[in-house]
Amino acid sequence: MAFDLKKEEDVKEFLENIGIEYRFGCFSERKPESCHMLGDYLEGVKKDFEKAAKVFRSNCDDSSFAKSCYKFANYNFLGKGLKQNMDEAFSYYLKGCTAGDYDSCLNGGLMCISNTPTVAQRPKDYDKGLELLDKACDGRNAFSCYYISGIFIQGVKNVIGKDMTKAFSYSLKACELGNMYACANVSQMYRKGDGVEQDVTKGEEYKKKALDMQDQMKEQMQLQFQQGTDQV
Image (cartoon, rainbow, N blue to C red; front, side, top):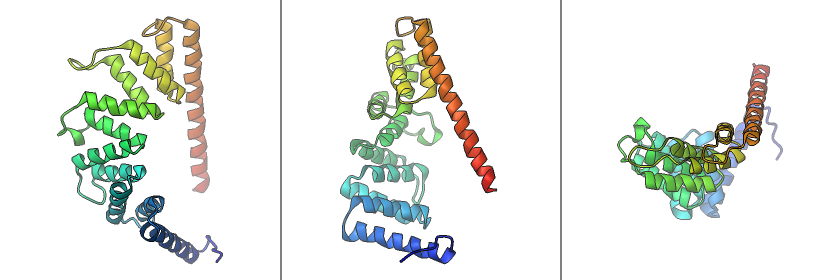
């Protein structure tokens, strides 16, 4: 059956059919991918966060589907579709990380060392936090690499010593993964010989790279703004 997606009734029927397809794939065929898409459908189309949370949790517990673990952890962290529960959030970030979702590793790591008010009741654990953040960095999560570099640039009093060699290593990796601020830090480190042998030429090279990324970001933001005004 062909749908005319310019017609409201056809759109509604199309979306209902998608929901039926996801339910069948999840509950009858027991496909973890279908269960996760069902959770996204319940969240994004039906706005039924309570049911979505149940689907994500079940898909994580029963199938170790990494993205579902991540989504259920987020629901607990935000109190979305259920009562906020930081212990559950951390537990499911760990499950997601173990299953290979590097955003879960990042968020779990941040929960270990964060000053965010919502996680203030959790004692800080820098060893575990760095372990999770490092795993996220190894999984090519640029922000995680950048965040670790910041820890070693500043150090943590009585816990982690300042280590510019490690800071440079993580900054370089974050830069290579596309983090503009990390590229700026690499530029400064090369120019000062801080954590790496001084090399003014390379300092300028990474400065240009950071500026090019900045220009690309500005162009992208301008394009998004123009697209938004066209729709008004």
